Image 1 (cartoon, rainbow, N blue to C red):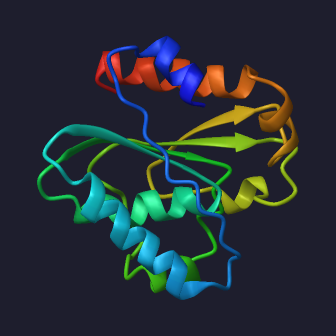
Image 2: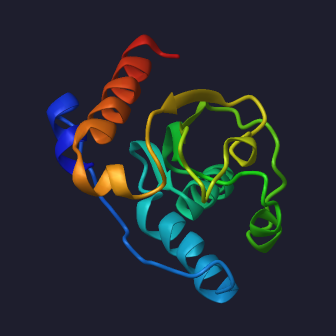
Image 3: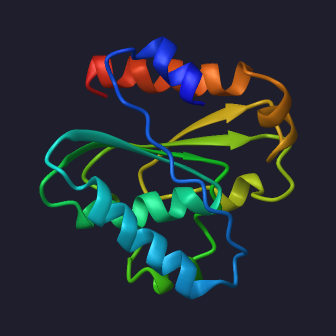
Length: 156
């Protein structure tokens, strides 16, 4: 992802947090959400990008940014309909004041297409599954980076 975003937006900085948590590790998930706000609410324009559970965290922390302007939230294979995660993060799923662009893997058996709906989101289908295509092909990352860059440029 880093390379794809850098190729489309070389002026931007792409920073990642790469923890892996199991869905039942509530304390770690809440601590990660707190860390993201503490670490990245620095006053700059940002785009929050989250994969799978990270997409839910990105949506939940967006309203907590006070100094930075969040321009967009991008979720990839995120199961938005599993609302107990939002309760853990003290977030009520509602339409956010920024665009939420959701990339949905049409062969994803982990985050099935009906779980990826978020109020007001822009849904883009990817011919991919949850993990394998992302691991072995740069194509999904390139597609995501291209879409994000185009939407930021157009202001949509």
